[in-house]
Structure formats: C-alpha cells, structure tokens
Image (cartoon, rainbow, N blue to C red; front, side):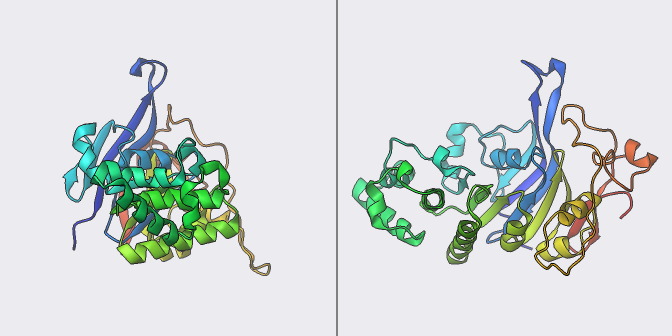
Length: 318
C-alpha cells in the first residue's frame, strides 16, 4: 500500500483556561488519528465545537500541536518552526469559510493571487500576472477581475478567487474549512463541482471540513466523524452514510432532511447538551447523551476498532 500523503497520529491541542494551564484546559483536539492519500478527499464532520476546524489549523500549522505527530509525505512537520516550514507551505494550502476575511481588501484580486507565486516561487511580476489570468479563467472568472477589489464581488465569486489563490502554487493538499457553508445552495454546487474538477486535473488531496452532511457525501471519498475533540467513526462515504455504526453518527444522519416526502425516517433526538470540553465526561465522551449507554460506558473508554473492511468506530456495543 502506498504511503499516505498526510498522516496524523495522536494529535492533541489543549487550550489553557485563563492565563495558564493551572486552572485546567480545554481539550479541543484529543488523540486524533487519520491519514489522507494522494488524490483523495477526507471529509470531517461533526457539531459546532467538536474540534474539526482546530484539526484543520493544526494540519496547516497555523496552530502548534500540544502533542502528536503530523507527517506530510513522510516528513514530521508538527514540531517545525516557521523557517523550517516554509518549503512545505506551497504544498499545504487552505480555503476558509469567509473568503472576504481571507482576502486583503487593500490588494486587487490580481495582486492577491500573484503574491504567493512571487514570494514562494520567485516569479517575475509579469509572469505571475499572466499565470493569474489563467487561474481566474480556470475558476470561471474573467480576466477583468484582475484590477478589481474583493468588495466588488459576490460571495461565490470571492470563494472562486480564494480557490484560485490556493491552487496558484500547485499544492498537493488543500484544507477546505467550511468552504461552502456561507454560500447559496446553487453556488455551493458550483464550488463543489469546481473543487472536483480541479482534483481530477491535478490529483490534489482535500481535507474537507463541514457540518453539511449532504455536501460531504457529494465530495468525499472517506469520512471521519468527530465528537468532543475525538474521531468516533471513520469509513468510506458509502459505508458511513448507508451503514453508520456509532450512535452519534446515526443521530447525525437522522437529522438530514429527506427530499422524498414518502420516505419515513426515524429521527434520533439526543438528550442533553454537548459536554464542556474543559471537563469532558469519563469513559466514552458520548455516554451522557447516548440512548444505549450503560454503566460500563461511564467508566471505560471504548477502543477505536475495525468494525468492517476499512470501517472503524469507538463503541463498546459494536
């Protein structure tokens, strides 16, 4: 089997409560493991606050991990300083939820897209601007956009600009963090199709972070489900959506509206609220809300085990 493009092992990120860890910590990411192969899309889903965006920022090294390993092409980048990371930056790019916030309002679109090529690849300005024109055309925008500024575009157009900038350095991996959640449904479909076309063209890999299960099902090859800083289930797209094993995954999928009015789906309503990540429950983190929980669940953490070919989950009753 080929070596994964990205390997994440025992990844943790704890944030101190107050000014130091003396008062405790928020366990935003707690022992997360997964890998992504070349040309593959891994979807990461879960409720708001489950730690999925923090995982994305850790992969990009926008945050320093508390513990664990991040291997990119077999090279450990988790403990590198900013100078050591610079050669890897061109291969690790991102597309964020709000493209307006990620684009400099004082820079024209042409300048914003050309800047990474000038800084990272040492391109001459004229060469970089010519490449920028090609990139704008690739993402469905006119060359007239070169001289315009971010505020002169719609949300969908700005996201296309952000994608053009992300692919300008021909990266191997893009972390897309809620990249379509702020867009209209029709525009979401266009952006998802664009990402798919770009992937087929250049064999890029994606870590696609979203709470929108329908979009994740459309774009992902494999899916990881997060709850309270941990991955509770991973499987191929079809396995996860057709045969979910973990009770939390089953509850998530039951909340997705079904367009067929004749289809009757039992809704699983979870009791209580998501626990505080500064004081996570003992044993299985999901047990306070799980409809199947017993005493063992409160005292013994379940192992993350294989429950089918390529299908893993952490539950005592699977």
